[in-house]
Image 1 (cartoon, rainbow, N blue to C red):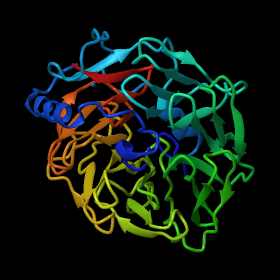
Image 2 (cartoon, one colour):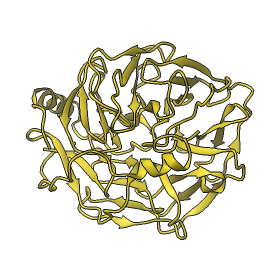
Image 3 (cartoon, rainbow, N blue to C red):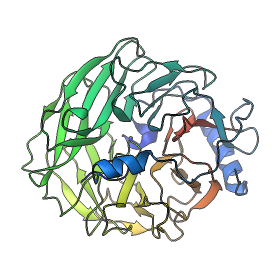
Image 4 (cartoon, rainbow, N blue to C red):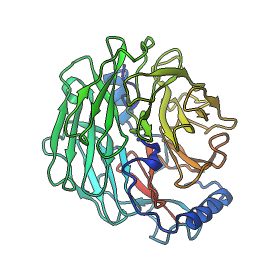
Length: 400
């Protein structure tokens, strides 16, 4: 079953694509965290076919804000500054932050955009002939090299790679198994990466690449625990599969009686599964996004993606690589589909969803709402470039 969003990484902040140069990182980050902590809350945030349709429906957030004027990072109270993508009909659930200037977004209608000037302008670099595809994840190594994943049953699940900034693309994988439905991508480095599919024959299916996404191989499933009844991943924001370091990878699930996170320490060959205390017991509930700042410390967010359903206990933390998970003491107030650690911080992270953005400054134990705009996913680069994207062509950068 492919839920919400039908069902990024070395933690979103430590992944291969975070290759931007860090400028005065320590001082800038300290100032940023101080401002974020002091800033008041601001007003102004795969079941198959039916789930796909519901996922693309407009979220419950308020109308897009007017983009703020560009200014130096963190000079004043930071907030999301919308960047005009010129694509109001596209929902961008795939996002890759390379640095403060460069970011890639991927979404509905086969759309892939790239900016290299901080969002002032966007280039449509969509693969030719992809208008019917739903892109849900993009992994970018730099401004020129990126890999995108299209999701769906059978041949709708595809992987494309570009080496020239999207001027040309090569289709490197097309799923030929009608039972498979790919949800997320993740890379350990510029060469090694994985993609995950919802269960086939009772086990999650894993694709592997060792050449940067130019070719893919299905890994044997002997080391994969059996899936629970109804269990699958959520292609909600490209963060249902994430990595940390050179070998550790985590996979988030939902839709079953219990939400789980699966962990592999050998690049996807063998896995262990652990229950996570977030809402479960329904195809619309589970863990939607993960972020690890190192191989031990991680965050999980999710809940129930239906706007008329509450999402208590929608966040959890781990300090032992996912062997155990603990509920947030004060979780986000609603369903969240994206999460990212702030660069160079051991305690601060952002979570986003259709009803807002939340901040934690104590490593996920407590969260408070910063903004009520609608976003589906969030990603941060080492130079403190944090981006978010979502419905109605919304893309924003965290600015002062």
